[in-house]
Image (cartoon, rainbow, N blue to C red; front, side, top):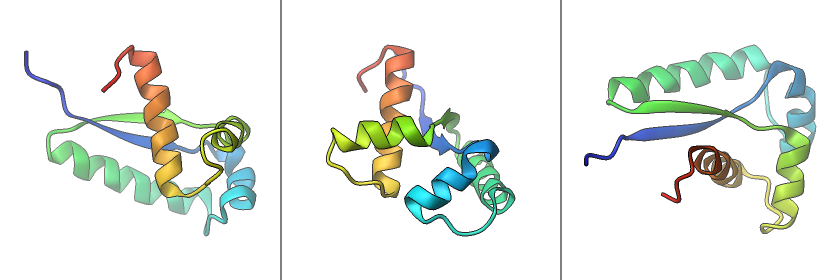
Length: 93
């Protein structure tokens, strides 16, 4: 069976934006981020990927991070989003 290509992206809610700015030193507004994120989604879809927008909550992410190395960088947020996705989908890939 062919595997489905999935591009997983951490998705940040507007109501959480101030917490993300504080925790991760994000720059700009949520609207600015959303514009860039949506462009990235379209680019990945044009390459044939299904896109999984995984909402991550700052408090839960920081709690998870504290027991998984303590980093709060982009790579760690991607790993966290992937772990949520795979736990929901029941896959280990």
